[in-house]
Amino acid sequence: MSLPVTEPTPAVLEPSGLDQEQPTETEAPEMLEISVNSASEVDTALEEAIEHVKVAANNHRTGILVTRIRPGGYIVQAHSAVPHGLVRQRNDPEGN
Image (cartoon, rainbow, N blue to C red):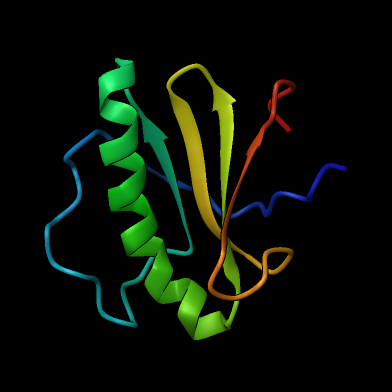
């Protein structure tokens, strides 16, 4: 089953490109696009992105969906199809 992907323009981030501080409620992104160059960067980049999107997800009482859109490319977003407090992952081989 494929979940719908929302259309907001994602912010493209490089690994370690996120500030160490938690975003405030007014600046919390609902969606981030992550690009990494090596497998060793994936976990850290996704963990940082999830922490930033978590603020928006909590505000909207949704969970977080992590979608692999290409090798080294991921979208992390607050998503209403994911229950609040959970993080789900999916592969999107077609880029949808």
